[in-house]
Picture 1 (cartoon, helix red, strand yellow):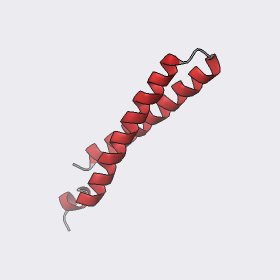
Picture 2: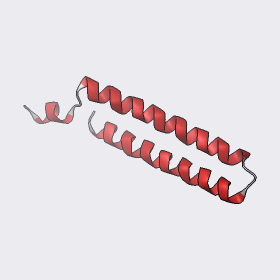
Picture 3: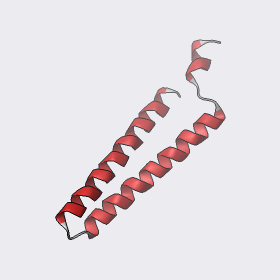
Length: 69
């Protein structure tokens, strides 16, 4: 197996990662929006933190995916 082949992801793994990227993006958007609706400061902060976690997960998956293409 050459270096190029070892860096590429198998099709089923690629699909799982792309699906997960979509889920993380959706959850980031939802928690951000929920945070905008909240009037309670603690709940607003919780939603913001959750949004940031999903944003970081998205970025990590995207970086991983980009490194294997």
